[in-house]
Image 1 (tube, rainbow, N blue to C red):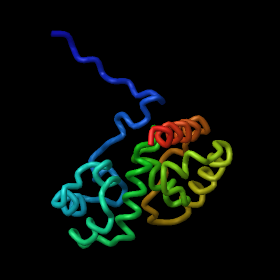
Image 2: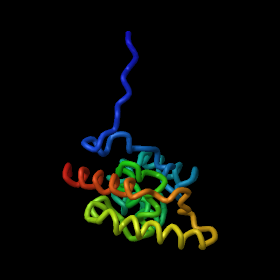
Image 3: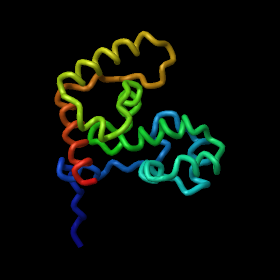
Image 4: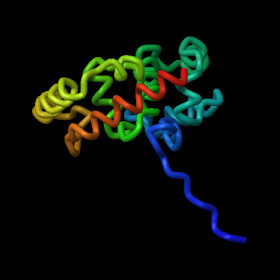
Length: 152
């Protein structure tokens, strides 16, 4: 038997490969991941699709924290934004894929650069950006978000 071909992610398949364990979301450590797993939430998609109220009631996790994580799980679907930039986008006020899809690339890129520079000055901020995304990265995010919204 031949080797299985590895699937390539394309813009037309914006959500492929963008599902990950919930622990990959910034702020979800081992204990929170364990609490979420106990109620059937193991992946970013599980978290995104679940009822915030039901999770909060079943786990005792703050609804405010769960809302942030659900927003990040939604943004996790965006190509090349997953994991590293979802917290940055959330902190900038972009909470959903739909909101991201409405952005203009050059304006968002300028905002990202400014926000990342300001964040470096804040000691202990957990959303540290190790590499400021390029304009091309931001364009990819927006195109991916548009594809996801279109499929919805």
